[in-house]
Length: 241
Image (cartoon, rainbow, N blue to C red; front, top):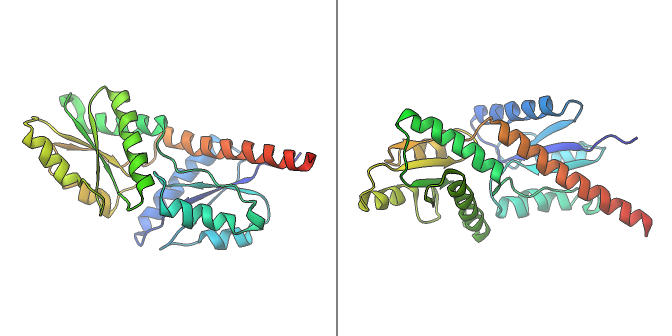
């Protein structure tokens, strides 16, 4: 009986070594949740090994799972596009992690922990990294809707880079509407520069990045399983033609 494909997790990569340590911690939890599953890492840039390097060296089947929260250029070009250029396009690739109810669970947990006993029924700003790609906007807006359903509170998407509205401006606008408390849910996977900038946005509460969370471990495996099953069915269909 053939073994399951390797789960090849692809993160963005960072000059900050601790970011790669965070990725490895998450993948260690994935291995613990699925004993026997082979899990490898690769990076888009700024860290090694690169995705092409791993795909050239990996001789057995793989399923690529991007550790990215939204669709956009990195998914289409740097992950799925690269995967499609190997083995005649027979390297299946999962979509972005978000939007997904499991991310809403993780975001809610992080935010409620940050708010603590004080609690809040005020608005939430969902602070995403941002992208120039319109697909990323749509994903963040959908994620804001899922978090609003989860918490029963209004959630406004905002962005930390070139995209608009900015996190800081959105917090200020909510203050202008005389909300007494404004909370920010950091829609980021890891600590780093973006997380530090979001933390300085002027909100009353800013949650920590998602980081290692049981819901994120479940989501990585769910993305892997969905693509693995679909790829297996596709191969079986082609073999039967």
